[in-house]
Every structure is written in structure tokens, then in C-alpha cells.
Length: 113
Length: 108
Image 1 (cartoon, chains in turn green, purple):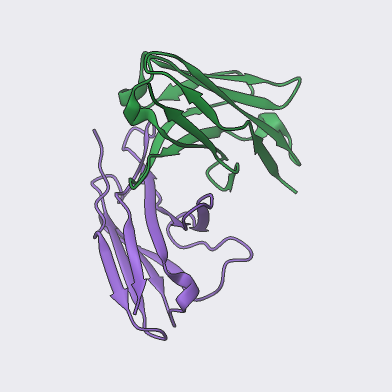
Image 2 (cartoon, helix red, strand yellow):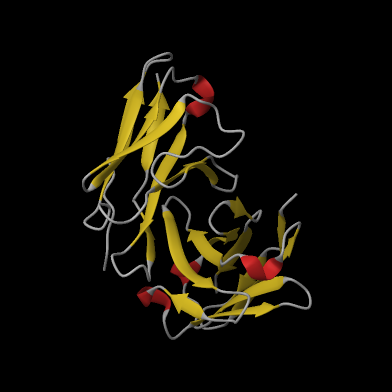
């Protein structure tokens, strides 16, 4: 069965960067786009961007352009998301989602001084 | 930037029918998707391509589309259906995806 296992919770100071990984199994990694979505406390779901693992092509939501980087590693079937210049309002649960149908368990990122 | 509009809240009694709408300019040419979100859990896809239901999703969940609006219908609402529901779609250029603001379903 499809499984997406994300890395553990992170705490960062404002201005720092954070990387979250998502290891996929149970399907052909390069056959499906991977999305990243986040949800801040008390807020709605927010689409961040998408990566095509077969060629590494990415599209980022305009809000995150310039400080978001998504990468894929076909040797380990893992996609990663790095967000830089963190602010307190980046505190959220971050999710990877295969074609928006199967989701990782979520990774809590806390940004606090 | 592209936006999808949902009502903030819907309330129904158990056994009744709940309808949640989602409107957006690109919906006449783009599919709508629906997710159920409960606290502490990952989102769950319940409707894709306007009206298709993934395996394992109860038949009481259905979706429809008309013009610039997609609708999620929950027939015979149960207490366990109390959750936040989000629609999602792509913009007209098929480049950017967006979620609606979410609708809190309360089962009275």
C-alpha cells in the first residue's frame, strides 16, 4: 500500500531554514507528482507547491517563491521541502501528498525565538 | 491570485442532508476535489474530479458540479462526519492549485 513517511517535528528561530522530508513507498515514485500543503494553527489548508519526481520540475505558490525549494531523490524515493527566512507565521503542520490523494502524517514546524 | 469561496460553517441534525458549496471562476473548466480534515489527522480525500468517490469512502458522500460551483453533499449525516471540509482546484492555467477557506460542519 502507498505510504508517505515524513521526518519529525522541528523547532527553529526566526530567520532560519527548515527542511522536511517525505519518503514514499508502495508505488512507482516517478509516476506521480508530489504536493506540499501546510496548515497553521486555527487556519485552513494552504497549497505550497508541487514537484514532478521524474524530472525535478517544480511549481511554487507565488506566496512562497524565493524562499521555498522542493527536491526529489529517485534513489531513495524521497522528496524534500526547504523553507527559508522563517517567520513566526510559518509555524504549521506541513504535509506531503501524492497527487493529493495519499498524504503523509504531517510534520509540525515551530518557529519561535 | 485565484480563490475558491466556501461558507464558513454549516450545521445539520443527524440524519439530515448537508450541502457545502465551493465557487471559483475556473471551476467550469477545472475539476473540484473535496477533503475532510479532523484535528490531529491528515486530510482525507473524499471526492475527486467533481463527483468520483475513492474506494472506502461511504456512499453518503457525493459531489456535483454546475457552472462555477461544485457542491459536496453528505446524505444522512452522522456524528462522525463533524469536521472541516475543504474544496480544492487548479487555476485556469492549470499551474497553481488552491484550497477554499474551509467549511466547519457541525452535527447538532
